[in-house]
Length: 103
Image (tube, rainbow, N blue to C red):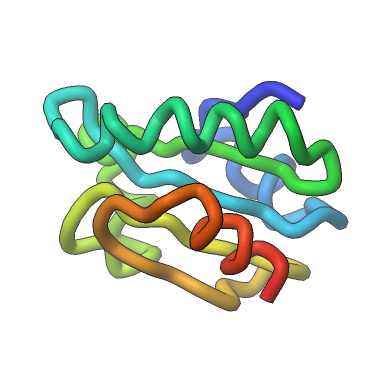
């Protein structure tokens, strides 16, 4: 499944109403570690249709980033049933990201 570009207008319908576990990647185009993480997040989306994967550009969506308490990027958040069940800042290996989703 492709990665969704998440913004204020589609957040409620795509993320909050998702029946699948959700992985959100908070990033910015100018962020080096974010650019390193991006292919991993894309792979996870393609290889795991049981998850919904979205990316949120913090430069374009500061209100969404603030609502998740994002203070550094990249930040990954895992949501289940509309609630955040896990969050981590900084680059992570793929296996760690998958274990966040499974946990």
